[in-house]
Image 1: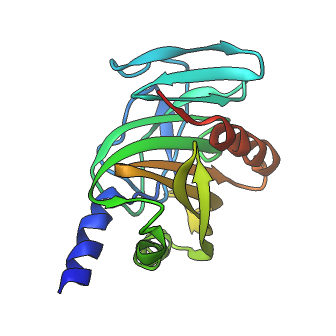
Image 2: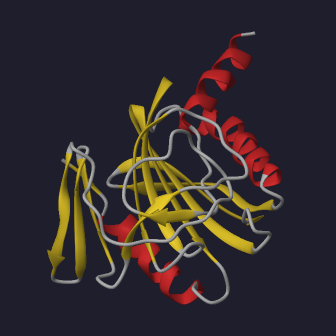
Length: 211
C-alpha cells in the first residue's frame, strides 16, 4: 500500500509535453504529451524577467532558474496535447515552430526525490513516462537513465509520439529533482528540426541553473 501511494503522488509531478504551441508565452494548465506550437516573442511570466541576449544565444531567467537557448528561437505557447498528467507551476517554451521546440516546466511533487532515493523511484517514474508516450500514440525508446542537471539528480528518457495533427515526433525528456520540486525539460522534434533541436536541447540542459 505504501509503495502504491508513493507512485500516485509522484504522478502529480510528471509531465510529458509532446506537441503543439501557439503564439505567445505562458503556461499550460497541466502537463501533457503530444501537442503543437506557433510563436512570436511575448512577455515572460510575471515572476520572470524577459529573455535577454547572451553571448551564446538568449537567456531565460525567472521562476528561480535560468538557462540559455539559441538566439534564433521564438518564445512559444503550448496549446494542444494528446496525453497529460500533473499540476504545473510554470512553463517556458522556445523553439523553431509548432512541433520543434524545447519546453521547460516546474512542478511541485509530494514525494521528495534526492540522490539517495532516486534509484528506488526511477522504475515507478519510468512506468509513468512510458504510459504517457503510449497515450500519445508512440512508445518509450530508452530510459530511465540516471543523469544530473544543474547538479541535481535527474532521469533521462527518449521516445516517440504522434502530435495532435498525426505527425510523428521524437522527444528527449530530462526530469531533475530538488526535493519536492521537479524541473521538467521536453525536447521535441521531427526530421526537419532534429539537428537544431538536439543541439539546442543540449544548450538548455547544460546551462540550466538554479537562482
